Structure formats: C-alpha cells, structure tokens
Image (cartoon, rainbow, N blue to C red; front, side, top):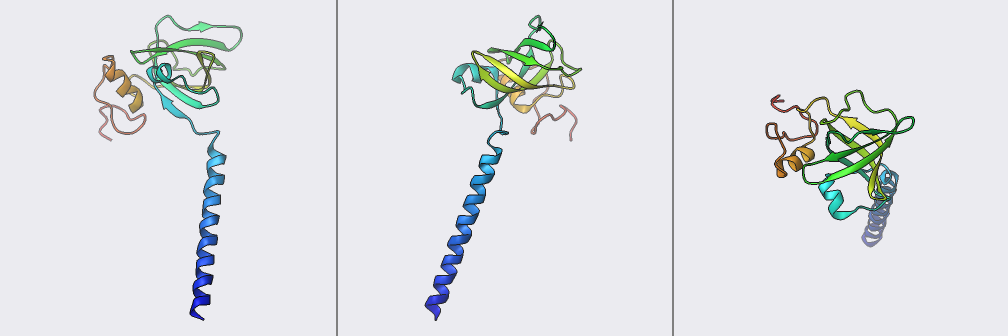
Length: 159
C-alpha cells in the first residue's frame, strides 16, 4: 500500500515538473520578440549583432549628424565617446530630441546601421541610463556626477 502511494506521489511530482517546464518554455517563446538587450555604440561595433536580434542602443546624438529625409525619415549618429553608430528612423521624433542630447533607440542592426523602431529622448543631461553613463565615463566623456543605481534616476536627487 505504501509503495502505491509513493508511486502516485512521484508521478504527481513528475507531472507537475513537466507542467512547470512547459509553461516556462511557452513564456520564453512569448517574450522572445519583445526582449531587447542594451548595447553601447562601442559594443555594437565590436561584436556586430545578428540582424534578427532586437537591441537598444544609447548615447549622445552627435552635433551636425542629424539628416532629415523625405517625410518622417531621419538619420543621425549616436556616440558613447569611443564609437559612433548611424541610426535611421522613420517616424515622429520626441519633442526633446536634439543634437548633444542623450537618447535610447530600440531596433535592429542591419547593413552596417541601426534601424530604429522607437526613439526615446532623455529629459535633460541629468537623466541618463546607468549603462550609458558607465560607457561615457569609460571613454572620459562623462560630465555629470557618478551615475545612480537604476535606470533613468535623476543624478543628485537622493531618491
């Protein structure tokens, strides 16, 4: 009798483990298209990511690099102080977008340029993602206070 209960318990545990594993795999596949890894321009130039990989690239818009095309098409260069990446974007740029401003663009690395599907502009130079601030600091370009932990934390706010 005890052996039968033990077998039933083991079958139930195995079934539960298989169910949890299949649920985790399904969640992984569901989020596969929405996961975007952050890369600095230097990292993108060094490793040349796959054209199918969704990425975020951040840095400062280089002075004199913004070129407006037909309609809503625009291209510009973003730098972290060590390397520059050309970003092409079709759409309406944020109101705060300008040269010398920090931005984060999300999209794909294709044909030697970054094709953005979304561009986010920073509120001002005090709002910088920690990864961008670290990359700028490594290149000796960082002008602000040490970056805070967390993404988009105001520098010097103490919160």
